[in-house]
Image 1: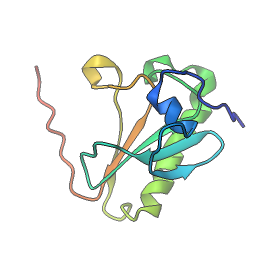
Image 2 (image 1 turned 90 degrees about the vertical axis):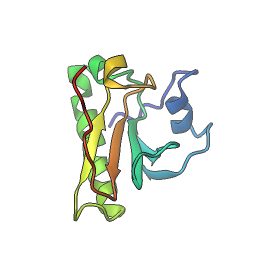
Image 3 (image 1 turned 45 degrees about the vertical axis):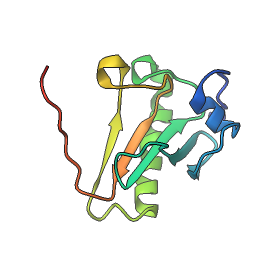
Length: 123
């Protein structure tokens, strides 16, 4: 088990994981915490993060693979708990500026509760 708490002092998600910033937490275990997005784009919009600070998917190492699996498994469990599994949901990692990542701490968006579209257009 990893049991590493976020250590970055200026990272907003590390502060949420340390419970220094209030948030609506929907799931937590020793390695992962999930909370409602402050600016939801769907009826269900939860962010699932590792308690270990990793800046982006681009920064994960081979040693982080089990942790990444735990994040995805937690999202599946949360979707079931929030009763959105029956009709489906979307899992989304944003990576870097062009991928739309706004916070420098890896986070998985769990989106659901309605029919979701892509609206991705070429540049």
